[in-house]
Image 1 (tube, rainbow, N blue to C red):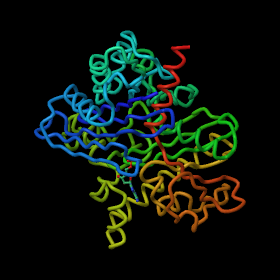
Image 2 (spheres, rainbow, N blue to C red):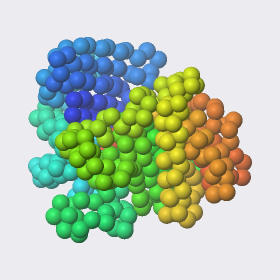
Image 3 (cartoon, rainbow, N blue to C red):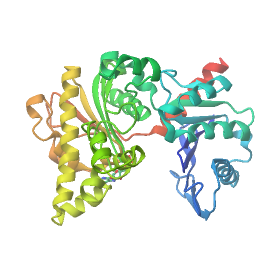
Length: 401
Ligand code: AMP
């Protein structure tokens, strides 16, 4: 079975074609600056093979319809002979609201429900455009939606409700939804398997630390709390997002800086986090700068680690017993300094990191805890595309049964 995974951002489109017989990636691509003056498409055939073929083109790409057309042109250029070879398409959808607790086969009603959730994630309207265009382009090929929010729908009300007037939940469904769910689900399943257990036999704290950052408390395979909220702005400090701050800062800025709500929103999403503190949002640059004595870079690193560590503590309290901390995503998988800083001083809570194991760089799942550490510490590379492809295949097979 060949599954195409599509992830439509507001001005970008990521795709991956996978042969699910052996889960190999046949092609992968990224279309960027859609709607901009000059767009860019980078396409790679057989990325994991012996002779990957990369092609990059820069050209105006007016909209997502054109982006999808470019994608199919590249796929038909040596990867597949006809679009009919694609058995199903899996779409990443950021916000499923309370409507979707598992992946579903797309029909008109599903598209309508996703549309109805757009006010909860207006920046991700492009998700629906991708689905609608794919339905037109690929005719009868089944489309499946996989939601970033679905893994978090198992949270109990005392974790997902905000202490705001009840009618705001009743009228507008203002509550914590959580994001990066596909990643948290994938790494928590992979971690359980690595530990030789079923998902329902382990308690985990999963740390997705990349450009965006979130942390989940996973009890017996189910998410019971997460750091992101109504939007992906909440929780941990991120590359350019502030994470949790005193909410009264918003009216304070409006009054004292005469900023509009849109300007404050942009400031918190795009000019804050690591970037806001030290002017850099890539952790590799932050390390380089702090090694050269940049005090703000040092502060940004310490704040990032401190906020993650504090949340590990609170999720330990939520779960009581924890089998493993699971680090994933760009920073979590690659940054030994950050992992060491997050775990520093946590030995009394049963978290003992092994400095040497932590410093080794190797692909795949790795254990970096000291021998005898009551809480294990794992690095589990995330693979959201594979999780979406697996879910898509399961939905299509179930529908055919
Ligand atoms: P992601 O959003 O998961 O793709 O993660 C992207 C982020 O990972 C980048 O912005 C970097 O901050 C971080 N990153 C990637 N490689 C490294 C590395 N070797 N050391 C530290 N941070 C890294």
